[in-house]
Length: 241
Ligand code: SAH
Image (cartoon, helix red, strand yellow):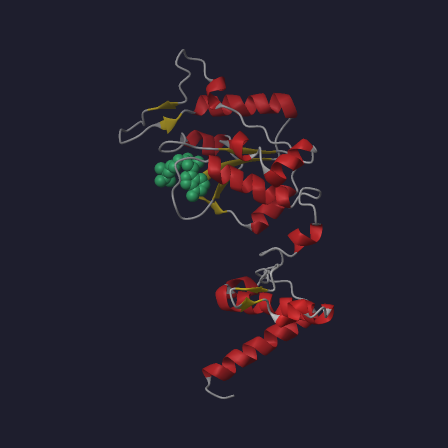
């Protein structure tokens, strides 16, 4: 699952160019019994199976032998801190990260207490395994590593990079089924285009995700635009014009 997803696109190219290296480990390789079992029934009873601690500890020991002590050992769990762009930025500054993926009912809790250095969650829903969250983390973190995405400006302008949602994008044709691209974008006025994009990003964030604005890093022009938009909103609320 991990290797298939990493065989395509931006991540595959980054791995090929050795900007990034991702190594998936199969827990079954770290078992010692004939059936190579990685799970067992839960103590105390109840449904499902639980991932045994030994294969996970052994897998991390093997990683330590190969590439040294990881800077973070992330356990994926719905109980973790919510993964975000800020978490991605933090992890992108580390050179060696291990991600532990659970399955079944979860993982023996001694792994959380004695092996993991932190716990991350994808959100308030339950997935059947940690592989998809791990891929999400690898993708989001990799985009922030210089040289992975071709154009650095593209990453800097992405949603959440500065606490703002991205502005809307358009491409050719200029008119599609009667729907036109906003005039300003085809005007060729770079100053106007820049301002329009800033306004759109701020307006979108104000309408959809006002919570982001508290932590946003806005330049003077953007602060001015935000003030105008808030004033305009107040005007509407008070019924004045
Ligand atoms: N019984 C557990 C869920 C187990 S799901 C509970 O209710 O909390 C099996 C595995 O999928 C978990 O061990 C975890 O590694 C992964 N997983 C499921 N949902 C996740 C989420 N929202 N974020 C991160 N990992 C998740």
